Length: 405
Image (cartoon, rainbow, N blue to C red; front, side, top):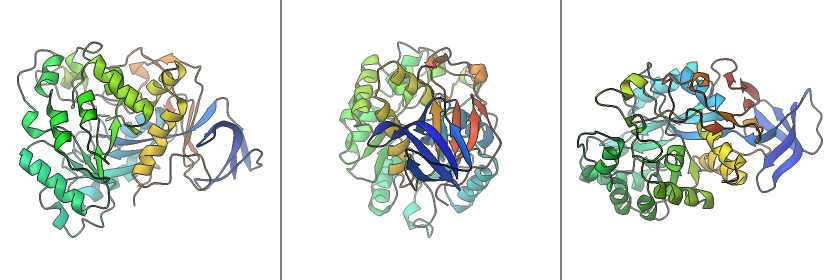
């Protein structure tokens, strides 16, 4: 047994001076005093590592933007030890063959543990594998289909699924494509898409709304559904990021939206923090038709730890949002430092605030909207008890396991 000693976040208790005993990737004991074969006294506080249930690692199909190696190294260096990859790769993850291909790729390359989301298409619920394929969830996009199809598919899956249905919550009839001359044009093109979509969605405990972006969308959330919010919809607005580099779906909005979502996040009515890590190269972002998406898996937790350090966010709320709540939503025994849980944790010093430097990040996108923003990066990151990142550098390669396999 390996023992880690230090001030540790224990759910329901807060920060406690304790020892955490780890064996074969699991936490086997949490006690005031423990003896083991190896003993590490940490120089910071021990927190559960992050589980990011919304990333786009672009593999297969777009390895110049990202692949499982670079994406997972980014995750690890930012304090995330488990991710769920979205299905809009090339080909889309929409059947057994493409699902198995992605799991195989991730198993061979990923430094962090992983799950895979499955795309919702016509006829999904009648497939022989609908009840058995070990996907993390179903993902429904509003692109390339009518609004009638979109809502029919949502209702059909919700009636039959035993796992979450994650929706990109924008109404197909309210996603317009007028030419973009400035970032606010993109926001205007989709000004009502989120609220119109969410107000028309059915109430279901199986429904999960990805990347909530507006105060009006928050007000229209279906009863019983859960939601997530990304740092860029809490910290960036049209006032602070006017460049088309910051084009994302759903779009950035006003500081009033930031403030309203942040307050809901603080209160826990938006329970989950996710990155929507969606890398494109800077050349693509500055082309005549810039794609939507920004990199974020490596900066998500460091940015929000700085919010804690600055006194704007409670540490317990952040730990719940980045670790406990996503694990619970996906039915996984992770996200807590407790006996029987996976030994995934990070060591941080909340007084060690450093500017984000794009040259120190690991995504193939090689740019960030958060250049020079203050952040608290973890000094050490452990996946199943193994050190996989130290001082913002990945340790080792591969070793990630399928969360649902």
